[in-house]
Length: 249
Image (cartoon, rainbow, N blue to C red; front, side):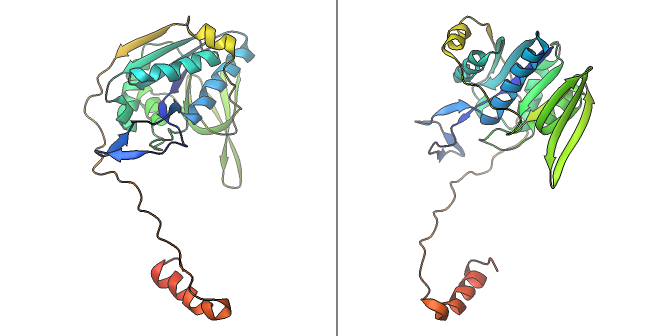
């Protein structure tokens, strides 16, 4: 089975970010492998191990700095990596990213495409479905359980009040979410082996962006709290403030 897992370099969710010129200022920010993409890489490795053979390729669209995250995926156990590089790639919108990834995937032999359900920096949740649509293959999103049986994908996804089971034929695209598996840590042996695994770098053209960010600002500071009174006598003023000022009633 040939599996391609797509990954992205993102700011750590604990990082303190600064906005400058309508984008994130990367100065001093820690970057990591997108957490949802870790589930995609882990699932690819588990499927390969269960089948007893196969090949796992990880692909990322990003700047040259994304080599670090690709090496992390290789250290986890992936067989090869491809970096689609462009200086503007870190700020590419979901539609542009999907177009570039689909073009890079065409002509490659694959049975399964695995994505994180979304990147934690933009939260657009559009790349996986966008790539699948351009390639003309089925896509199942937010999968929490996945099996390959007799050339078919059987996937479960959580819906309100229960779980939904979907079958699709291969090749297929899957977006992965928390609960699908528990991503492994790279071992020292895996880290050493990753240095010898192939990583191709391909310059790509992003073309015209599909989305323009008009403005980006940090959320306003939370106003200081205030005490409206004490005991039962404070209730009318509290209700008034919630209704007229906070507008939550």
